[in-house]
Length: 394
Image (cartoon, rainbow, N blue to C red):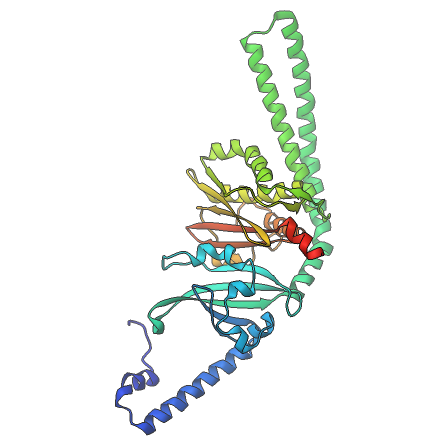
Protein backbone atom coordinates (compact mmCIF):
# COMPACT_ATOMS: atom_id res chain seq x y z
CA UNK A 1 0.00 0.00 0.00
CA UNK A 2 1.32 3.43 -0.95
CA UNK A 3 2.69 5.40 1.96
CA UNK A 4 2.89 2.41 4.30
CA UNK A 5 6.22 2.11 6.15
CA UNK A 6 8.17 -1.11 5.61
CA UNK A 7 9.86 -1.65 8.98
CA UNK A 8 12.29 -4.39 9.90
CA UNK A 9 9.49 -6.08 11.81
CA UNK A 10 7.30 -6.02 8.68
CA UNK A 11 10.11 -7.68 6.73
CA UNK A 12 10.45 -10.40 9.35
CA UNK A 13 6.71 -11.01 9.42
CA UNK A 14 6.73 -11.21 5.63
CA UNK A 15 8.90 -14.34 5.77
CA UNK A 16 7.27 -15.86 8.84
CA UNK A 17 6.90 -19.31 7.23
CA UNK A 18 10.68 -19.61 6.73
CA UNK A 19 11.67 -18.89 10.34
CA UNK A 20 13.28 -21.65 12.41
CA UNK A 21 12.13 -22.33 16.01
CA UNK A 22 14.87 -20.18 17.56
CA UNK A 23 14.06 -17.21 15.29
CA UNK A 24 10.36 -17.71 15.97
CA UNK A 25 10.99 -17.61 19.74
CA UNK A 26 13.03 -14.43 19.36
CA UNK A 27 10.23 -12.87 17.28
CA UNK A 28 7.64 -13.75 19.91
CA UNK A 29 9.78 -12.21 22.64
CA UNK A 30 10.28 -9.09 20.53
CA UNK A 31 6.56 -8.75 19.89
CA UNK A 32 5.85 -9.21 23.58
CA UNK A 33 8.36 -6.50 24.49
CA UNK A 34 6.90 -4.08 21.95
CA UNK A 35 3.36 -4.82 23.13
CA UNK A 36 4.44 -4.26 26.72
CA UNK A 37 6.14 -1.00 25.75
CA UNK A 38 3.05 0.38 24.00
CA UNK A 39 0.79 -0.73 26.85
CA UNK A 40 3.06 1.06 29.32
CA UNK A 41 2.79 4.21 27.19
CA UNK A 42 -1.01 4.03 27.03
CA UNK A 43 -1.30 3.22 30.74
CA UNK A 44 0.58 6.33 31.86
CA UNK A 45 -1.93 8.53 30.02
CA UNK A 46 -4.43 10.35 32.20
CA UNK A 47 -7.09 10.01 29.51
CA UNK A 48 -9.00 6.79 29.09
CA UNK A 49 -8.45 5.08 25.73
CA UNK A 50 -10.93 2.56 24.34
CA UNK A 51 -11.10 0.73 21.04
CA UNK A 52 -14.59 -0.48 20.18
CA UNK A 53 -16.23 -2.24 17.25
CA UNK A 54 -19.33 -1.04 15.43
CA UNK A 55 -21.46 -3.09 17.84
CA UNK A 56 -19.99 -1.25 20.83
CA UNK A 57 -17.90 -4.20 22.10
CA UNK A 58 -14.71 -3.05 23.82
CA UNK A 59 -11.58 -4.59 22.25
CA UNK A 60 -9.03 -2.63 24.28
CA UNK A 61 -9.02 -0.34 27.32
CA UNK A 62 -6.08 1.29 29.07
CA UNK A 63 -5.67 1.72 32.83
CA UNK A 64 -7.28 5.18 32.90
CA UNK A 65 -10.39 3.80 31.14
CA UNK A 66 -10.70 1.06 33.79
CA UNK A 67 -10.41 3.69 36.51
CA UNK A 68 -12.94 6.07 34.96
CA UNK A 69 -15.57 3.42 34.26
CA UNK A 70 -14.85 1.54 37.48
CA UNK A 71 -14.37 -1.98 36.09
CA UNK A 72 -11.45 -4.40 36.16
CA UNK A 73 -9.60 -5.66 33.09
CA UNK A 74 -11.60 -8.89 32.99
CA UNK A 75 -14.93 -7.08 33.39
CA UNK A 76 -14.27 -4.30 30.88
CA UNK A 77 -12.61 -6.09 27.94
CA UNK A 78 -15.33 -7.62 25.79
CA UNK A 79 -18.09 -5.65 27.47
CA UNK A 80 -20.47 -3.50 25.42
CA UNK A 81 -19.96 0.24 25.88
CA UNK A 82 -23.71 0.99 25.42
CA UNK A 83 -24.52 -1.06 28.53
CA UNK A 84 -21.85 0.63 30.62
CA UNK A 85 -22.93 4.15 29.61
CA UNK A 86 -26.76 4.14 29.26
CA UNK A 87 -28.10 6.67 26.80
CA UNK A 88 -24.88 6.92 24.79
CA UNK A 89 -25.89 4.87 21.75
CA UNK A 90 -29.00 6.90 20.75
CA UNK A 91 -26.93 10.06 20.42
CA UNK A 92 -24.27 8.23 18.35
CA UNK A 93 -26.66 6.44 15.99
CA UNK A 94 -25.86 8.63 13.00
CA UNK A 95 -22.15 7.87 13.35
CA UNK A 96 -22.53 4.14 14.03
CA UNK A 97 -25.08 3.55 11.31
CA UNK A 98 -23.26 5.45 8.55
CA UNK A 99 -21.94 3.04 5.97
CA UNK A 100 -19.92 5.65 4.11
CA UNK A 101 -16.15 5.82 4.71
CA UNK A 102 -16.19 9.49 5.78
CA UNK A 103 -17.66 9.20 9.28
CA UNK A 104 -18.07 12.14 11.63
CA UNK A 105 -15.93 12.75 14.67
CA UNK A 106 -18.21 12.82 17.73
CA UNK A 107 -17.76 14.71 20.97
CA UNK A 108 -20.09 14.94 23.95
CA UNK A 109 -20.14 15.03 27.71
CA UNK A 110 -21.51 12.16 29.79
CA UNK A 111 -22.32 11.78 33.45
CA UNK A 112 -20.99 8.67 35.23
CA UNK A 113 -22.26 7.68 38.67
CA UNK A 114 -20.00 4.67 39.39
CA UNK A 115 -17.62 4.28 41.16
CA UNK A 116 -18.26 7.95 42.01
CA UNK A 117 -20.14 10.81 40.32
CA UNK A 118 -18.04 12.45 37.62
CA UNK A 119 -18.33 14.22 34.30
CA UNK A 120 -16.43 12.75 31.37
CA UNK A 121 -15.83 14.24 27.93
CA UNK A 122 -16.05 11.59 25.23
CA UNK A 123 -14.25 12.03 21.90
CA UNK A 124 -14.87 9.29 19.32
CA UNK A 125 -12.86 8.95 16.10
CA UNK A 126 -13.58 6.30 13.42
CA UNK A 127 -10.77 4.38 11.79
CA UNK A 128 -10.29 1.29 9.66
CA UNK A 129 -8.27 -1.60 11.11
CA UNK A 130 -6.35 -2.77 8.05
CA UNK A 131 -4.83 -5.69 9.86
CA UNK A 132 -8.29 -7.05 10.71
CA UNK A 133 -9.81 -7.24 7.26
CA UNK A 134 -10.41 -3.49 6.91
CA UNK A 135 -12.95 -3.71 9.71
CA UNK A 136 -14.41 -0.43 10.95
CA UNK A 137 -13.62 0.51 14.53
CA UNK A 138 -13.76 3.56 16.78
CA UNK A 139 -11.11 5.03 19.05
CA UNK A 140 -12.78 6.55 22.12
CA UNK A 141 -10.92 9.06 24.30
CA UNK A 142 -12.35 9.68 27.79
CA UNK A 143 -11.25 12.74 29.77
CA UNK A 144 -12.31 13.36 33.36
CA UNK A 145 -13.45 17.00 33.35
CA UNK A 146 -15.27 16.99 36.69
CA UNK A 147 -12.96 19.52 38.34
CA UNK A 148 -12.57 21.55 35.16
CA UNK A 149 -16.32 21.60 34.65
CA UNK A 150 -17.03 22.65 38.22
CA UNK A 151 -14.47 25.44 38.17
CA UNK A 152 -15.60 26.55 34.72
CA UNK A 153 -19.22 26.67 35.78
CA UNK A 154 -18.34 28.65 38.90
CA UNK A 155 -16.24 31.04 36.86
CA UNK A 156 -19.00 31.50 34.32
CA UNK A 157 -21.63 32.09 36.97
CA UNK A 158 -19.49 34.32 39.19
CA UNK A 159 -17.48 36.30 36.64
CA UNK A 160 -19.48 36.20 33.43
CA UNK A 161 -23.10 36.19 34.52
CA UNK A 162 -22.99 39.73 35.85
CA UNK A 163 -21.43 41.04 32.63
CA UNK A 164 -23.89 39.08 30.49
CA UNK A 165 -26.83 40.36 32.50
CA UNK A 166 -25.52 43.92 32.25
CA UNK A 167 -25.12 43.56 28.49
CA UNK A 168 -28.55 41.96 28.16
CA UNK A 169 -30.16 44.69 30.25
CA UNK A 170 -28.58 47.33 28.03
CA UNK A 171 -29.71 45.57 24.85
CA UNK A 172 -33.21 45.10 26.26
CA UNK A 173 -33.34 48.81 27.17
CA UNK A 174 -32.17 49.90 23.72
CA UNK A 175 -34.68 47.63 22.01
CA UNK A 176 -37.46 48.26 24.50
CA UNK A 177 -37.57 52.00 23.93
CA UNK A 178 -38.28 51.88 20.18
CA UNK A 179 -40.69 48.98 20.68
CA UNK A 180 -42.64 51.03 23.23
CA UNK A 181 -42.65 53.97 20.82
CA UNK A 182 -43.92 51.74 18.03
CA UNK A 183 -46.66 50.39 20.28
CA UNK A 184 -47.82 53.89 21.21
CA UNK A 185 -47.84 55.15 17.63
CA UNK A 186 -49.64 52.06 16.40
CA UNK A 187 -52.30 52.65 19.03
CA UNK A 188 -52.67 56.27 17.87
CA UNK A 189 -52.96 55.18 14.25
CA UNK A 190 -55.52 52.56 15.24
CA UNK A 191 -57.65 55.18 17.05
CA UNK A 192 -57.54 57.54 14.07
CA UNK A 193 -58.50 54.68 11.78
CA UNK A 194 -61.49 53.84 13.95
CA UNK A 195 -62.63 57.47 13.80
CA UNK A 196 -62.23 57.42 10.03
CA UNK A 197 -64.24 54.22 9.81
CA UNK A 198 -66.97 55.74 12.02
CA UNK A 199 -67.37 58.79 9.75
CA UNK A 200 -66.58 57.43 6.28
CA UNK A 201 -67.53 53.81 6.76
CA UNK A 202 -65.41 50.70 6.41
CA UNK A 203 -64.08 50.14 2.91
CA UNK A 204 -61.42 47.92 1.40
CA UNK A 205 -58.67 50.47 2.05
CA UNK A 206 -59.52 50.97 5.73
CA UNK A 207 -59.90 47.22 6.20
CA UNK A 208 -56.45 46.69 4.68
CA UNK A 209 -54.96 49.33 6.95
CA UNK A 210 -56.56 47.65 9.97
CA UNK A 211 -54.96 44.32 8.98
CA UNK A 212 -51.56 46.01 8.53
CA UNK A 213 -51.81 47.60 11.96
CA UNK A 214 -52.75 44.28 13.53
CA UNK A 215 -49.79 42.55 11.88
CA UNK A 216 -47.40 45.28 13.08
CA UNK A 217 -48.76 44.97 16.63
CA UNK A 218 -48.29 41.20 16.53
CA UNK A 219 -44.70 41.57 15.33
CA UNK A 220 -43.92 44.10 18.04
CA UNK A 221 -45.36 41.68 20.58
CA UNK A 222 -43.25 38.88 19.12
CA UNK A 223 -40.06 40.94 19.39
CA UNK A 224 -40.93 41.84 22.95
CA UNK A 225 -41.42 38.15 23.69
CA UNK A 226 -38.02 37.30 22.24
CA UNK A 227 -36.35 39.85 24.53
CA UNK A 228 -38.25 38.52 27.54
CA UNK A 229 -37.35 34.91 26.74
CA UNK A 230 -33.70 35.85 26.27
CA UNK A 231 -33.50 37.61 29.61
CA UNK A 232 -35.30 34.75 31.36
CA UNK A 233 -32.95 32.21 29.82
CA UNK A 234 -29.66 33.80 30.82
CA UNK A 235 -30.69 34.51 34.39
CA UNK A 236 -29.41 31.70 36.65
CA UNK A 237 -32.78 30.72 38.08
CA UNK A 238 -33.94 27.16 38.83
CA UNK A 239 -36.52 25.65 36.46
CA UNK A 240 -40.18 25.58 37.48
CA UNK A 241 -40.69 21.87 36.90
CA UNK A 242 -44.09 20.51 35.92
CA UNK A 243 -45.31 17.50 33.94
CA UNK A 244 -44.65 18.45 30.33
CA UNK A 245 -45.37 17.06 26.87
CA UNK A 246 -42.23 17.69 24.82
CA UNK A 247 -44.05 17.31 21.50
CA UNK A 248 -46.62 19.97 22.45
CA UNK A 249 -43.94 22.50 23.49
CA UNK A 250 -41.95 21.84 20.32
CA UNK A 251 -45.08 22.30 18.20
CA UNK A 252 -45.63 25.73 19.77
CA UNK A 253 -42.07 26.80 18.93
CA UNK A 254 -42.30 25.56 15.35
CA UNK A 255 -45.61 27.39 14.91
CA UNK A 256 -43.97 30.53 16.28
CA UNK A 257 -41.14 30.16 13.75
CA UNK A 258 -43.30 28.97 10.84
CA UNK A 259 -43.16 32.29 8.98
CA UNK A 260 -39.37 32.50 9.11
CA UNK A 261 -39.04 28.83 8.12
CA UNK A 262 -41.32 29.43 5.16
CA UNK A 263 -39.45 32.58 4.13
CA UNK A 264 -36.15 30.68 4.18
CA UNK A 265 -37.62 27.77 2.19
CA UNK A 266 -36.77 25.26 4.94
CA UNK A 267 -38.81 22.08 5.39
CA UNK A 268 -39.34 20.62 8.84
CA UNK A 269 -40.04 16.92 9.32
CA UNK A 270 -41.10 15.93 12.83
CA UNK A 271 -41.35 12.19 13.52
CA UNK A 272 -42.75 11.17 16.90
CA UNK A 273 -43.60 7.48 17.02
CA UNK A 274 -46.63 7.32 19.30
CA UNK A 275 -47.16 9.38 22.42
CA UNK A 276 -43.98 10.48 24.16
CA UNK A 277 -43.59 9.76 27.88
CA UNK A 278 -44.05 12.83 30.08
CA UNK A 279 -41.03 14.64 31.52
CA UNK A 280 -40.67 17.13 34.34
CA UNK A 281 -39.66 20.42 32.76
CA UNK A 282 -40.05 24.19 32.66
CA UNK A 283 -42.06 25.00 29.53
CA UNK A 284 -40.60 28.47 29.06
CA UNK A 285 -37.02 27.25 29.37
CA UNK A 286 -37.74 24.39 26.97
CA UNK A 287 -39.08 26.88 24.45
CA UNK A 288 -35.79 28.76 24.66
CA UNK A 289 -33.85 25.52 24.06
CA UNK A 290 -35.94 24.56 21.02
CA UNK A 291 -35.87 28.11 19.69
CA UNK A 292 -32.06 28.28 19.90
CA UNK A 293 -31.56 24.90 18.20
CA UNK A 294 -33.99 25.53 15.35
CA UNK A 295 -32.55 29.02 14.86
CA UNK A 296 -29.02 27.59 14.65
CA UNK A 297 -30.20 24.99 12.15
CA UNK A 298 -31.92 27.61 10.00
CA UNK A 299 -28.80 29.78 9.89
CA UNK A 300 -26.63 26.77 8.94
CA UNK A 301 -28.85 25.84 5.98
CA UNK A 302 -29.55 27.56 2.71
CA UNK A 303 -32.79 27.58 0.72
CA UNK A 304 -34.41 24.14 0.38
CA UNK A 305 -32.80 23.07 3.64
CA UNK A 306 -34.34 20.28 5.68
CA UNK A 307 -34.61 20.00 9.45
CA UNK A 308 -35.59 16.57 10.73
CA UNK A 309 -36.71 16.18 14.34
CA UNK A 310 -37.01 12.66 15.70
CA UNK A 311 -37.96 11.34 19.12
CA UNK A 312 -36.89 8.06 20.70
CA UNK A 313 -37.29 6.63 24.19
CA UNK A 314 -35.86 3.96 26.43
CA UNK A 315 -36.65 2.85 29.97
CA UNK A 316 -35.06 5.93 31.53
CA UNK A 317 -34.98 8.80 29.04
CA UNK A 318 -36.65 10.63 26.18
CA UNK A 319 -34.40 11.75 23.33
CA UNK A 320 -35.05 14.51 20.80
CA UNK A 321 -32.72 14.58 17.79
CA UNK A 322 -32.48 17.73 15.65
CA UNK A 323 -30.74 16.89 12.34
CA UNK A 324 -30.04 19.49 9.67
CA UNK A 325 -28.33 19.22 6.30
CA UNK A 326 -26.46 22.49 6.68
CA UNK A 327 -22.82 23.45 6.50
CA UNK A 328 -21.78 21.42 9.54
CA UNK A 329 -19.15 22.31 12.15
CA UNK A 330 -15.39 22.11 11.85
CA UNK A 331 -13.76 19.48 14.06
CA UNK A 332 -11.61 22.16 15.68
CA UNK A 333 -14.75 23.98 16.84
CA UNK A 334 -16.61 20.96 18.26
CA UNK A 335 -14.85 21.01 21.62
CA UNK A 336 -15.52 24.76 22.05
CA UNK A 337 -19.22 24.82 21.22
CA UNK A 338 -20.41 25.18 24.81
CA UNK A 339 -17.90 27.85 25.80
CA UNK A 340 -19.43 31.29 26.41
CA UNK A 341 -18.81 33.88 23.69
CA UNK A 342 -17.43 31.26 21.29
CA UNK A 343 -19.29 31.54 18.00
CA UNK A 344 -18.69 30.57 14.38
CA UNK A 345 -21.28 33.08 13.09
CA UNK A 346 -20.35 36.63 12.16
CA UNK A 347 -23.32 38.10 14.04
CA UNK A 348 -23.50 35.50 16.83
CA UNK A 349 -23.12 36.26 20.53
CA UNK A 350 -21.80 32.82 21.51
CA UNK A 351 -24.37 32.26 24.28
CA UNK A 352 -26.99 30.08 22.60
CA UNK A 353 -25.48 26.64 23.14
CA UNK A 354 -24.20 27.60 26.60
CA UNK A 355 -27.80 28.44 27.53
CA UNK A 356 -29.05 25.16 26.02
CA UNK A 357 -26.48 23.12 27.93
CA UNK A 358 -27.20 24.85 31.24
CA UNK A 359 -30.95 24.42 30.92
CA UNK A 360 -30.56 20.72 30.07
CA UNK A 361 -28.29 20.18 33.08
CA UNK A 362 -30.76 21.86 35.40
CA UNK A 363 -33.43 19.50 34.04
CA UNK A 364 -31.23 16.48 34.82
CA UNK A 365 -30.55 15.91 31.12
CA UNK A 366 -27.69 16.15 28.66
CA UNK A 367 -26.97 17.56 25.22
CA UNK A 368 -24.75 15.94 22.60
CA UNK A 369 -23.59 17.24 19.23
CA UNK A 370 -22.39 15.29 16.20
CA UNK A 371 -21.35 17.11 13.06
CA UNK A 372 -19.45 16.72 9.84
CA UNK A 373 -18.40 19.74 7.84
CA UNK A 374 -20.35 20.02 4.61
CA UNK A 375 -22.92 17.38 5.59
CA UNK A 376 -24.82 18.72 8.58
CA UNK A 377 -25.26 18.52 12.33
CA UNK A 378 -27.25 16.37 14.75
CA UNK A 379 -28.05 17.71 18.21
CA UNK A 380 -29.40 15.18 20.73
CA UNK A 381 -31.31 16.28 23.81
CA UNK A 382 -31.72 13.74 26.61
CA UNK A 383 -34.51 14.21 29.18
CA UNK A 384 -35.17 11.93 32.18
CA UNK A 385 -38.63 10.40 32.04
CA UNK A 386 -41.04 11.44 34.76
CA UNK A 387 -41.58 7.85 35.91
CA UNK A 388 -37.80 7.40 36.11
CA UNK A 389 -37.60 10.31 38.57
CA UNK A 390 -40.32 8.66 40.64
CA UNK A 391 -38.42 5.37 40.73
CA UNK A 392 -35.22 7.14 41.78
CA UNK A 393 -36.96 8.80 44.73
CA UNK A 394 -38.36 5.55 46.12
